[in-house]
Image (tube, rainbow, N blue to C red; front, side, top):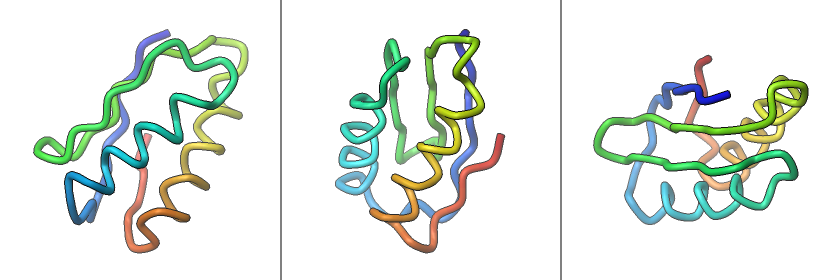
Length: 72
């Protein structure tokens, strides 16, 4: 399943790259792209695990960029 998640208050491209790297390591993620310019995460992940993957993404984002919010 491919889904686009909105990101609010992502401060820099370096943080976006670190978030993308972290998300790519989550089991069940086929591919991911984090765009600082559009403030979006494009995620291709296993359907059955999608909700758990999004929870993990939120944890990664908060760890790297505490003021940033992921919106489904």
